[in-house]
Length: 351
Image 1 (cartoon, rainbow, N blue to C red):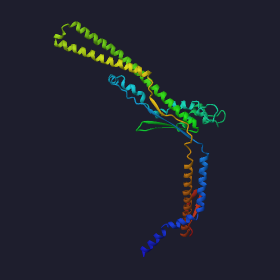
Image 2: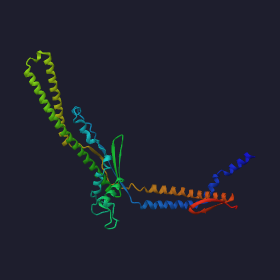
Image 3: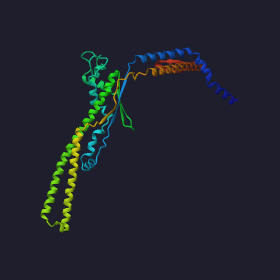
């Protein structure tokens, strides 16, 4: 008997999916109208959102792997070599996050469709326009606001396999997005070229200083060898003198080798200053996009429709749950009473 009662109680508490379906089906009109309403709101939202265009450039950094044997030898003596490759080691992603680059982008004069004359980004975004006269933000505050907004408009991605760098710019103006992407390319190329020349000049100055020192040391070594031969005419007949002569000769040979290497490095550095080999190669320039990247109107409408449908079903289910709980409370001789501060308490009907 106990087992039968337990089985009956379990069957009673089980959810009949068919009954749930028919209960939901009773509110089919509500579900349809609610879904349509949310879909319409999604359409309105997609239509009122301003279009945002995306322009991108693809860059490729040339690798500084021209380390010749001369540079390898020079690096052993503390010059050349590694210094020659410093210009190619900067990160474009880190560079585009600096205020130095953002300042140039913000205050650059841009041609836009919204303004007849060229304007900077502060004017284009109308930062501080709504402020009352005399109480508006300062120039520094305007720059900070534009800087924070611009950071979200520029993204940089790097392909780990090919080292291809893609810079994307999102703006409300199609032509402005392309112009900014190409201007960013010019800034990166100028920075890389300036860094290369600065590094090369620094390296050339270091080589020149080292060359003067080695030249003096070579002269001293040659003078020591000359005096030894003048003072020891019969050095070839004495083993001890032969050993001293060999040491002096090796010293001269080493200084000559270092001197010649530094001379060649100096000429290489001079050529490096005037050569036009690009540090950054532009694979694809930015062009003005025709279609906006945002908002994705189709996706917004689809998401709004599904969200409305499932939300309407949830509302219907919660309605049934509410009435079911209410009936259960009343059946057990209890009622739900609302007291201050939104706290619910159970109070027995029996006093």
